[in-house]
Image 1 (spheres, one colour):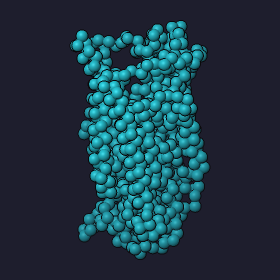
Image 2: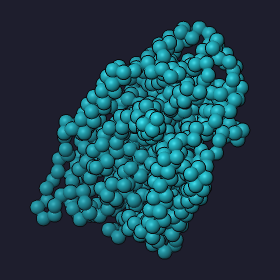
Image 3: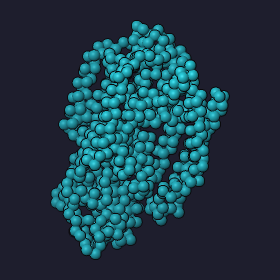
Image 4: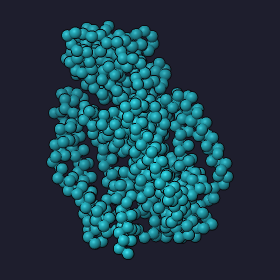
Length: 484
Length: 147
């Protein structure tokens, strides 16, 4: 008897199979473990694919694209091309898994569930939480759809949800990167935006202690999207209507704001399966049951084989992403030609001589850094798809207009081009030279995956300023005037 | 044991709220302090950044004992809860809304599957897939809240 008691206690203490799957999925989403050590994000080709769960693609560990971030950017680019790829992937994920993704695969859902483990009094679902559960549809409509579409007319890519709300981006992306001392200089960028998003993150985490998955229930637009597929998703909790007695125990024990099992609020966690007195509820993939009451479809040897296969896949993925051959994308072209000065070392650091380069200008011709010797030179790395980049271009234009005779300005577009840059520039009256960084100039100036980046060279071509992050006109002027 | 756990739970709830307030207060204080006029040499020209590793470390050092006490209390609470065994919430009977049987489900799924595949192929052809890659391999500093 005592043995039985002990066994039960240990079993209760062990993680459930769903928790193990959640941990497994979180690790798969963030398989680039060496990114946490290097402080750099993964830049391999697996980021062509959207991961199913909410997992910021700027997180050092992320190996896939965030579907929500990709959707906002696709909508922001919908003036140029239909956002069919992301919509197709969301349709596919929603159709096959729907909100089962929330229950089993989403890393941010896992974080909230773990916080909910802290033994405090809990707030149960009620009319208020049920009403709040519709807020995520408003957020989807306003921040994910309306804001990016509204900003198209102003030629500004604006992922509203990422910028103003997403706590997964703050947690995985911003804090994930800043936690590494390698990115210590990026702290200089932090201001009101980070403060606001950090407070949102703190509130979401605190709420998670008292409420079950508050972000998923009230705020997550990705869950709202997957919820649209509640009636058709293939994998999920299904009820056999002829066995159901409408006792309501399933809905009563559920911590989500569902009205019935399997509706748009249901995350298909299958905790209701064992509560159902008639065994009417089962987690199914199509018609095949994956979990039924007191029955384990993959029992005995089958279960071990399934776990062994899953672990083998995980091991393979971890080796692939973290091995010396891991799929980091190589720069598409060779390093730029660099003029070596014997007296001052060439390099991107302040006090070093800026590496020379030549870049093709939009509108024809070439820009050569060597031609600007004798002038203070301001180099700006930007891209049409980078919101802070396009927002700060007017400051460079104003600087160019004010100090044009003494200051050379060059705006170098990233070699990752998603829009017709000529057409984009035609929508403005910029007179500063715009060129394409087609030879890895950004790498020569110490940049990598973060935009915008601004560099100031003095009249002899020595770097006096080199930082990632937005600048204002006042900052530019204060950097340039002492060098004149 | 249950009563003790409840008291512990209440204490943890208060501590959790306090920790949240502490974090919010510190973040707001860092921001407000960093934006004082003495941190600018001219309007818009900053001479001292808002957040610095030294400042954050100094603040954390000041509040570290509180954080450690909180983490220890959480650990004790979790162990205590495990020792006491799970108190399973008693299911309340709530009549579920009637489910409308999905009609022609297989056909609908097939159509949606075809549409999804077509959209993905179309997207791969019109450059949408490359857009996803470009955004995912570059960090938009504003998008993740860096600024």
